Length: 205
Image (cartoon, rainbow, N blue to C red; front, top):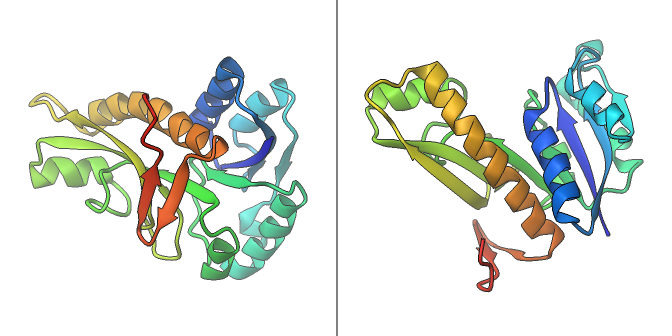
């Protein structure tokens, strides 16, 4: 039984998708905690309603990133997780923190990495005139928005798209690809080889 901790900063829609999919598909896993850096994160209420323990480590209460990360790491490790999932967790994490969870911390980024790192990815894609845009699930490394890619999904950019419409269409894809990637981890179907993630060839979805 794999133990999963999910970190959120807001509504946690990807967290909700993972929780719901895990329950529906009867994963051999337990979401053992949802932790936020904001006490007003709406996703905390949802997690609590599902019987998932929640806690808050308020980032603005710490003088440095490293000080916050140290306390956050202690809180996470209380739950002895096999996997840490960043689901809209709006913090840049220190190298030491990231390395503590090497190959067992995932993030989802709203672009087809390595293209369009950072913020405002939908604007970046529209400004660049690309024809497809998408989302990427990857293992987290100290370099921002890099790390071994686990899975990606793409959509075609329409002539009528703006940032909002593109964001909404991609959110649907996020709710497909992120639970799938987490399930692969739970099932032991991911193997990291350098900067590449191999997925068992017997996967059918």
